[in-house]
Length: 78
Image 1: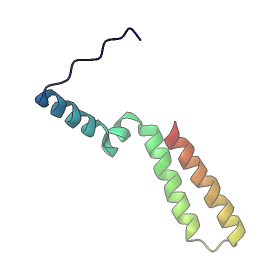
Image 2 (image 1 turned 30 degrees about the horizontal axis):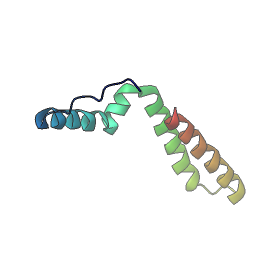
Image 3 (image 1 turned 60 degrees about the vertical axis):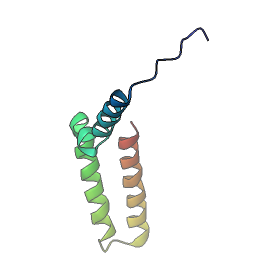
């Protein structure tokens, strides 16, 4: 409660901060910061796409697709 409110930024400083935040929010930046996760996600997405086009029985294909989708979600949420 004893904290002072920060001084407002100038227009130029606010624009610079916004540009920097936008640059850091790009997919390329995320991939550079998390190369292992990005590779694993790409691999799982490829497997998920392959599963969707195979002639495996519907129940097995659906089960595998759900598990792969969860794995991708887990990778991205960390």
